[in-house]
Structure formats: structure tokens, C-alpha cells
Length: 475
Image (cartoon, rainbow, N blue to C red; front, side, top):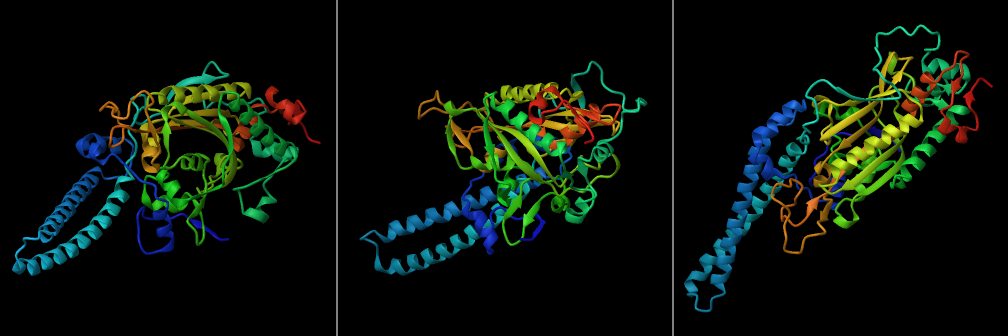
């Protein structure tokens, strides 16, 4: 089966088999457009802050046109009902009936025309509205990242520092010398510099990291899941995985040819889609999962310090994901962050914790915190983990709601809860995600931070039961 880049497609379309498949999913979207229209200047300011190409004022214009078109459809329906009622009157004068029949036929044609126009207009509105990014947390700096913590360190590294101790080789050189990373043979199979054969202790190290991360997070109350490595294009789009500029969409995702299925870039996508169109009870929240999956990303391979394992087209990742109520999401976000800190403390990795700026946030994230490991071979920090709170951004697109447990059937959520649905009696869940272990980059950090003067790699204590050795050496 051939694979091609995933190009933008319309959410609600007619005419082709793939577009009809999207419609058949039956997942409703509620983008809270009325709130956007009422707060349009704030929305536009946030779009600019996020460096997005979305157009808030175009969305408002289209929304108002849709509202007007719906009112016109309702007016026509009301007039048809009035005529039908008049025609059913037994005392109707006979000479009035032909005129009413002609009027009814004309209204039927007008309604069909207006409904078709409304559908097309709604489609255009959805295309523009789904590009608007999430709100931005007050904790988020606008342009520059902010250091908020350190792991296994007391001071932040000076990236201009010359270590000069003879043990700062990069992971590619270390792996080649140990015979555990084979980039050369990969070129015969998968092309240059975007994949690697992990051999011997490198293969065991990946499995050790996966087993350690899964078991550790499971003990924290997360349910283990192995997700599909493919997902419908619609699910990916509704999770908010659209680049900030439309022309870059073809560089993000691999799509199976003659299908609406894509290879996932993260297990966050199938996990979010797993609950699409569900109405949950608040008593069941939060629902927390830890997933193992392969991830596929079409992004261009970096050069220099982004070579080797750092930026792969395919890699293994263990991901935390949670569905929560609006009241729970902030505490769940900090719970995910704390688990991440504990994992990297136990892996004996020197890291910094960084609050990411608005300009670098993807569309779904309200707040994002990265953990970056010191990578001596690169002479810089590299991202190995991130945690994001997406509020109701994804759930509104995937129709994942909950019914507040303490409210009766006639009660409503507070008006200031932005996650409330149109009826006010249900709310959209908040979704949160966090990396437990992105295997290749964690391997880089371990190999470069734990390299020994004789060219070996000291195995972190928590991984030794899996590898059955203390040091990786040349065999």
C-alpha cells in the first residue's frame, strides 16, 4: 500500500467516497462560535500571540452569515407550515387553493436552495474556524521560554561551555563504536539519516525504557493501552494537528493511498478519538491512560546536531493521556508533570523544565511545559518530554462530553464555565497529554550523559533489571 503526504480535506463535504466516509463518522463539532463572535477582539489578539494564520474576523463574518441563513431557512419553514395549515382548513375557498399550492412549491424550492447554500457556507466556516488556536494560559510567556525547574542539577548549563573532558562524544559515535547503532545499513532499507537499526544492547535499552515507563505510570493509576498506529484523517484534524501555515500540511503526516487513514504522529490521536461522541458521567472522571505506540512524522530530517536518533521519521513513545472535568484539569496537568519529573530523576538524567512560549504552542495547547535533557554531544539541551493541557479544544471537535454528577436533570452549569455545552446541562471534557518516554531522545540523553571514559555507557539503576548489566560495553 502506497503512502503519501496528508493534504488538507474538508470536514463536511459531498461528492467523493473519502469525503462521504468523513460524514459517516457522525462526530458533531461545537466550536463555541457564539462566544468567539462576542469576544472577537480577544480572539484576534490571541491568534496574533500564537503566531497563527487564522482569521478571527473572517470567522465572525461567516458565523453571522450562517446565523442569518439559518434564520431565513426557519422563516421559509414557518411559512410552509402556515400555508399547510391554511390548506387543511375545510372552509378554505376553492379559488385560494391553486395559489397556495404554487406558493408551497416555490417555498419548497427556496428552502432546498437555502439549505444547500447553508451547508456550503457552514463548510467554509468550519474550515476557517478550526484553524483558530486554543486560549492561552496566563502562565505562558509570550515569546521567550521560561526556566521553571531543574532535574538532577542545581544550575542550568552554559551551552557555550567547553567540557573538554574527553567524554563528550555524540550518541552516534558512541553507538557505532559499541556496535549497537547501525545507521549505514538503514540507508539500504529506509533511506539516509532518518532511521536506525538498534542492535544488541540498544534494542534491549529501548525495550527497557518502554517497560520501565509503562510500569511506573501504571502504578500511578493510569490504564495501559496499546493503540492502533493508524487513524482516520478526520480524527487527526479534529485533534487539532494542523500546522500554523496551510502550505506545511504535506510535511507533517503520512497518509495511506486510496484511504482516509494516516499513520499517527503520537498515540494522543487514537486515545482522543477513542472517546469521540461519548457522553460520560463526571463520577468516572478523570480517566487516565498510558499508551505505547510507534509514531510516524514526515518532518524534514535535521542536520548536524539534529541528526542520528534526534529527529526520526519513525520512533517509539510511551504517552500519558487524560480526560477530566474542567475542575480537575489543572491538578491533572501538575500530576502529569510530577510523574515526568520522577521518571527522569530515576533515569539519572540532568534536565531543565521549561514553560513554553505562546509563539511555540501548537493549536490545541492552552499551556505546555517541556522537559529538556542536557546532551553533551550536541552541546545543548534537547526536548525529551512535554506536557500539555488542551482544555476543551479537542473534545469540542470530537464531541466528548460529561454530565456533572451533582446536578439534577433540570440544572445547568455556571455561565462562566467555557466548557459548557449549548444546553448548559453537559460540559465538554478537558484533555491532557504528557510524554512518559520518547525512546530515541531518551536514549541519546542516557548514552551521552552516562558515557564512560573507555567508551561504554553506564546503565541507570532502574533499567538494570531489564538489561541485566551495569554498563554497556563493546562485546
